[in-house]
Amino acid sequence: MRDDDESRPTPAPAHRVGEPLDTLSVAELSERIVLLQREIVRLEAARDAKSAARDAAGSLFRL
Image (cartoon, rainbow, N blue to C red):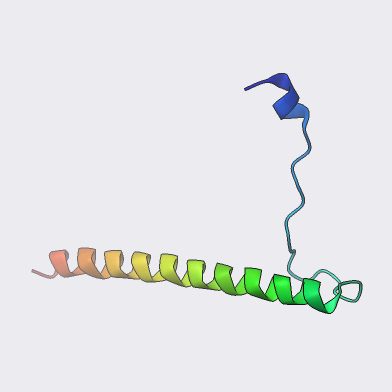
C-alpha cells in the first residue's frame, strides 16, 4: 500500500440512516430507495444463511 492511499479520505456513505432528506431531489430519493432495498435483500440473505447454519448445528446436537 502506498502512503498516498493512506492519506486519501474515505468516501462518504451513499446514505446515512436518519439524515435530513429535504435537500434531496425526487431522483436522489428514488436512488436511495433502490440502494436500501438491495441492502435489505443482502441483510435478509445473511440472516437466513446464519439461521440455517444454526438450525443445522442444533440438529446435530439433538441426536
